[in-house]
Length: 106
Figure 1 (cartoon, rainbow, N blue to C red):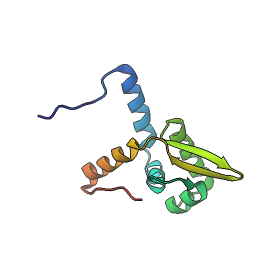
Figure 2 (cartoon, rainbow, N blue to C red; figure 1 turned 45 degrees about the vertical axis):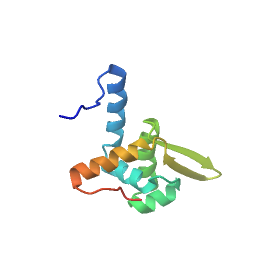
Figure 3 (spheres, helix red, strand yellow; figure 1 turned 135 degrees about the vertical axis):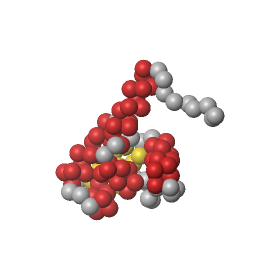
Figure 4 (cartoon, rainbow, N blue to C red; figure 1 turned 90 degrees about the horizontal axis):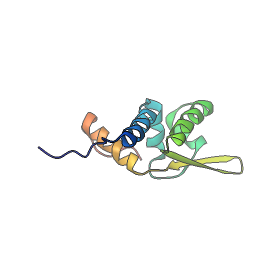
């Protein structure tokens, strides 16, 4: 059997748990998928995921606090990007495991 490299230490467990909690919501998964490996304006993310500005902003904030997304303001526009690209790999692997396909949207 293949050796698994799973988190076992207290700090590792807390970090992984917080990240998994942050990405566990379906809309947050859609937001991460919409952003992908690019930087996108929140208004474009709203259009892609089909949700309101306030709803998307709340979920972006959860992902930002978890260190999954980062954002920057340019005048009155907010841009988001994935802060930790390993989350894209995690979600791609999850999609492959649970859906039998590879490659996340975008």
